[in-house]
Length: 122
Image 1 (spheres, helix red, strand yellow):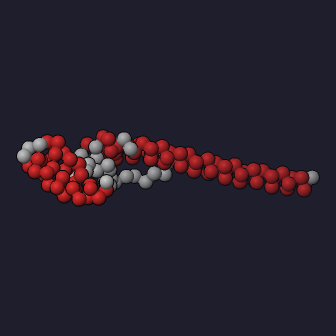
Image 2 (cartoon, rainbow, N blue to C red; image 1 turned 90 degrees about the vertical axis):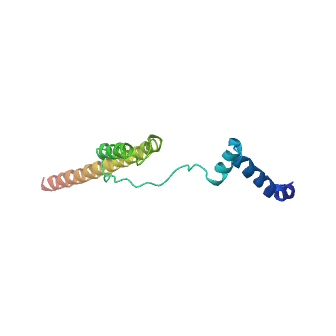
Image 3 (cartoon, rainbow, N blue to C red; image 1 turned 30 degrees about the vertical axis):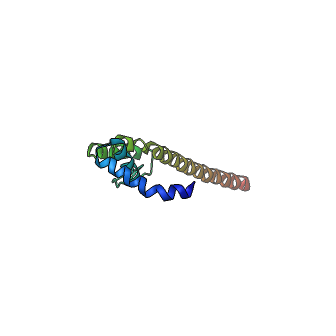
């Protein structure tokens, strides 16, 4: 079966091209779909603010909206960004929790040390 397809592929391709040249839209679509497929995504460069806190998400949203307005990306392209915003937000909250935990730990160590000193004096 594969050999038959290989043997006839050139003839089929020539026929499809001939039909497309003759105005057959379906044949033209076959050629363009195979030779010039619609890109599923493309890399773009957008100037984004540094994402350190959840407050930075507002500035990032503004950058995305500006890129849409300037025609740099489509609305469909922008729809993919919220997942990364959500991830950045989770990372920011995690960082905040780590810092709070470290502050609590230092405070606890100071309180324990103060308690030991007070007990030693008594």
